[in-house]
Length: 464
Image (cartoon, rainbow, N blue to C red; front, side):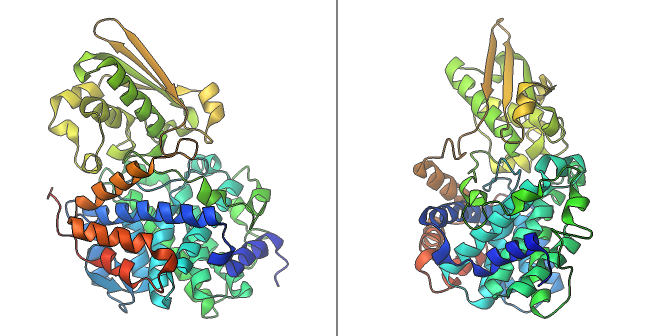
């Protein structure tokens, strides 16, 4: 082989992992987060939201062998184009499961990747789930080895950079690549790995999810090329121009392989989102909505709201042009309405609601260099301090959000979230059939039932 032990160890995990190798709790958790992610995928196909509409039109224009489905658009295309389109839609609503510690959106990348390649090769449902779990685990390991905060500091998007390696793992596993080809596939993934935080300046919210589409497409491309004998670097985690040199200034390479094949934290530590926005804001939203209920708080009663957050993550949330990442906007909508809905990140509520607009201007964001900063990125600890018009001062600190492994979302709430997402674009019969296909994956001989329910055109959705 290549004399590259870390890269080869990763390749070994990818080649050797089957559904039978996964602990029962890992397979079950993969099924749970896949269901949640599938609901978000279908919701993103709503024609009212430009991201799904435009990326599907692009894929249709490019054409390709009809071997993989594009969610919600009634068509099939090439495996790489389907991965690009569905990966982009996977993160469009910013509502799919995420990994808090590694600052990743792995389900947005790995479900589209495994769906596209799984359709192409006729994979069983269990094999599909194993590929999703494997992709999430590899993506997590790469991010932890590089350091998520390190990537941010250099202007890279961890989900895009590390997602390419996870997608390569999922695709290589489903394609049945041998160890030598998988080493080359990882090298080809490294050649393509990309994703700049520059998307933060795109208020259309198109460039943000495109990062996940790139990762899925790049991983599929790497695995397909390697499977055809295409050459590639053979030690990207070991020697030469390594991944660590490119994307980190303080890497921890040992985390790439520590406990490999035994620990599945890339799956088991995934969190299910209760709100459609950047996860950095979720603990504060829980705290804010709790204060709203306890104090019968209205937007008009708030004289000033101060949001304190770790300095290392502040650039993502302080007056961000993207509605999904703007603390001033998200907190104002949630406080005024008592909730945050998917359309809120596509249609600016400040433009039609004077109360929300005024409240957003009374919200200040403050960087913390002390205790909150020390907890980041393991925790998105934050503090809300509200000064009311009648002179009260209300303070609430929260370190984790509902939906984290430490505070799991109740099954009834997770199911309600799924049904609510699907209801926005499809009728109850479609929702029931999609849920049945997802819940029956472990015994499904192939992905035809799931692919059909995801592929069918959406039949509901309010136009912009």
